[in-house]
Image (cartoon, rainbow, N blue to C red; front, top):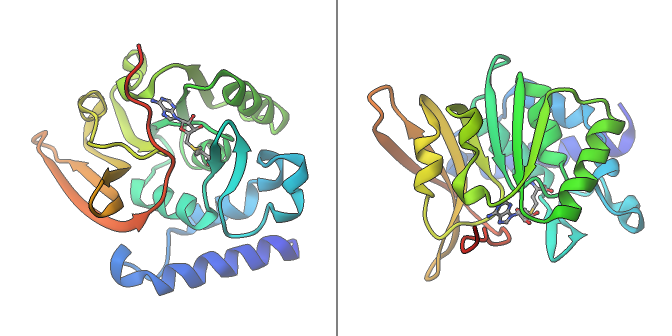
Length: 219
Ligand code: SAH
């Protein structure tokens, strides 16, 4: 393993231990950590930030958006509890880094982004890295992606003011939805939303986080 990736993995593991009492575990899923080793993050960050690609922090990707912190990418992927046969919906493709991590873990990823240029750039990365199991769309992810629903898991990588009902509707019973939700008085909270086999919703606040906002008022 390349040294920079090894340091990043060490950093993520340390942060997982440090936050263990919030996230309810001191180690993340092995498959998720293996995906973090395998996906080259430098391909998803702007050229001028290449030397920071393996820092455990968010970085700007243009258009006022950011590529998420690797620890958060790993944690959200772990919370989804992804199985190899799963179909996962992602809202907020952004750089495409989280999308690629998901693509290593499941059969098919569907990802929605509202900014055309970011969506295009991400698709170029997926082609270059030869991912064949990612489908993308430009549009308002608040509405989900009805055509391929229901999904085994849904991940939202921008902060919403509430859990969008279309996403709850597009989640399979037994599935997980991971989403940062902002309550103006207390910042943002990463929420794990489970739809049980009876179709009932159970939610858990996992951790305080900082995401760019999910845009809601279009289409
Ligand atoms: N997972 C991405 C995160 C990018 S930041 C990464 O690590 O690179 C969040 C992304 O969500 C931004 O690209 C933003 O444009 C997008 N976004 C915000 N609101 C959206 C909406 N309603 N529908 C689709 N994408 C949205």
